[in-house]
Length: 237
Image (cartoon, rainbow, N blue to C red; front, side, top):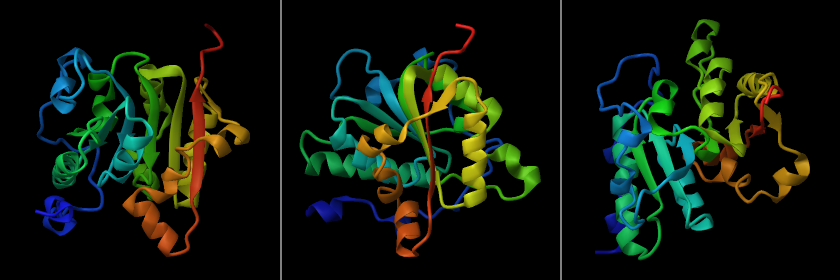
C-alpha cells in the first residue's frame, strides 16, 4: 500500500466549519492533569511524557504536522471540539507514523472544549507555546463571549503557560485581529514579542502556511493579522 493510500481523506470526515463552544458536548473530561493518559498518545516516549505545545482548535492538523519535525523532542497536542475533525487528525497521524519511521511520534490530538477544560489538561506553567490559528470570529456582538481569546480566558492560558512562553494568534478578519491584540495588550501577564524576535522565529511562517485555512486565505490573496505575545510575570511578583 502506498504512503498516500494510508492517509485519510477529508471527504470522509465531513464536519461543520465551527462548533458552538458554549454548548454541552459528550466526551470524557479528565478531572485534573494527572488523570490525562498522555503516555498512550506518545508511546515512543518513556516515563511521564509532558506536553509543551498546544494547538487550540487544531483543525485538520496541518500545524501539528509542520511543527513535528522542527521540534522532534517536544510533545505537541492538538485540541479540537469537532468529533469528525478530531478523528481525521488522529487517523492522519497514525497514517504518517508507519510511512515515516521515527517521525511524527511527538504529536497527537484530543477531542475537548478548550474554552472550558484547559486547566483539566495542563499543570501550572507547563506549556511553552500555545497556538490559536484562524479561530471562529463570532461576528455578532452578542457572541463575542464565544471567542477563544478573551480577557477571562487569557487568565487560564496564563496559568498553564511558563514564564517566557509564547502565545501565537492569527486571523484573516481585521476586527478579530484587533480584538485579540487588544485583549493581549491589556492583560497584565502578556507583553508583545519584538519584531526582531518574530522575524527569526521559525514558527511564525507556519502560522499562515501550515493550515488549510491559511492556505485558503493565501490562494484568495487575503490579508492576515498576527498577534504574538510572551507570558510575563505579574508586576506584583
